[in-house]
Image (cartoon, rainbow, N blue to C red; front, side):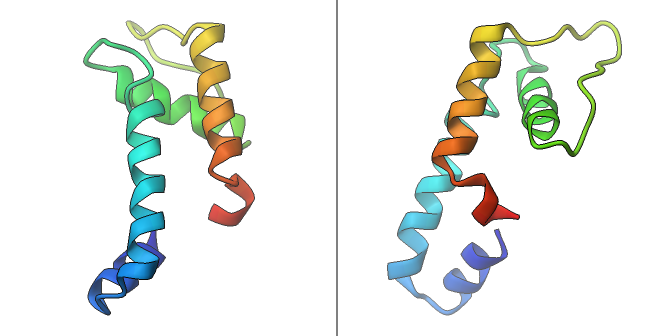
Length: 86
């Protein structure tokens, strides 16, 4: 997301628009993966787990996301070209 910051500082709208679209996709899938107040946290931890950066362990009272939600996050990461984000 440094690219988005730098593009914003430089007022480079050609770079800002596609990067902002990626941010909105993240917000729509990963941060809203569950409708509970903790949904954003479960979505982030799931995404980190799918990328190998975190284990899937959640402390009580949190529960794991459904397979459908995990699949949605996996698809979102693929659509975001996760390798480009590293």
